[in-house]
Amino acid sequence: MIASVNDLLTPISIFGYSFTGQILISGVEVECMECKKDRNLNNCNCTYEPCSRKGVCCDCIAYHLKNRELPACCFPDDAEKTWDRSFEHFARLVGAGRV
Ligand code: SF4
Image (tube, rainbow, N blue to C red; front, side, top):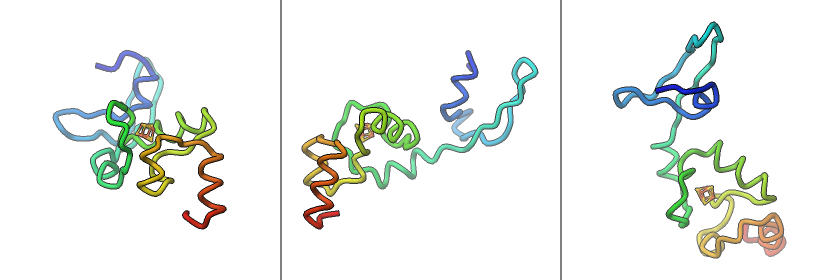
C-alpha cells in the first residue's frame, strides 16, 4: 500500500512485477521508474550482510555520499571487506594504482 509520496521514491512491485509509469495520487502525478534491484545484486560485491540498501543503488550511493564515502562496488574485493568506504581510503587505492 502506498502511504505517502516518499513511498514512491522506492520501487513498487505489484504481483511480482516492477512498476513503471505514472501514478495519480490525490491529483498529483508521480513518475515511477523500474528498479533493477535483481540485476544490480548480480554485480554487488558488498559483504555487509544486514544492509537493506543492497541492490538499490540509488539509496546506496546517496547514503554513502552523505557520509563522505563511496559504495562497496567502487572498491576491489579485498579493500571492500575492510568496510572502510571513505573517500580517503578510495584515494589511497587510486594513488597505489589499485583502482
Ligand atoms: S555499499 Fe553500503 S549501502 Fe551499499 S549495500 Fe553495501 S553497506 Fe549497504
